[in-house]
Image (cartoon, rainbow, N blue to C red; front, side):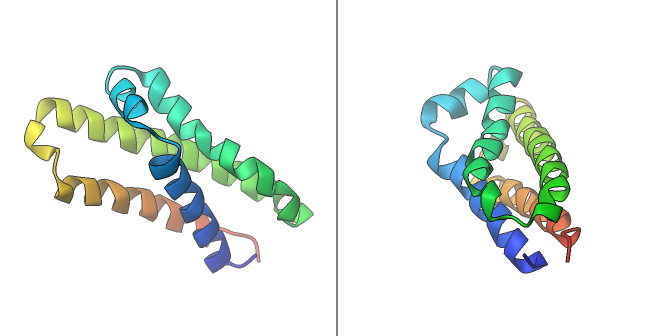
Length: 117
């Protein structure tokens, strides 16, 4: 897979976990619990799992490292957004939502740039 293909794959995974697999209950639970944030972030590995056979064998180590990075960064971004929202309620706006999404996309871009050849 190329860098571009990895980017779109990880972007797809992010879209699935943030918009398809995350319901209202999970959003509200994340506001009260770190466990919920990490469960939500870890859903990315569940989405990636069925696609593992399609990766080249030499890319498994990269994929593992990339997923650890993305799950961790996703959780930290979500935690920061939640804490910001608690302290400054006016940050619950479209602008801050888009900023949050840009942070997720930046992390996906970063990990994709290190994709093997």
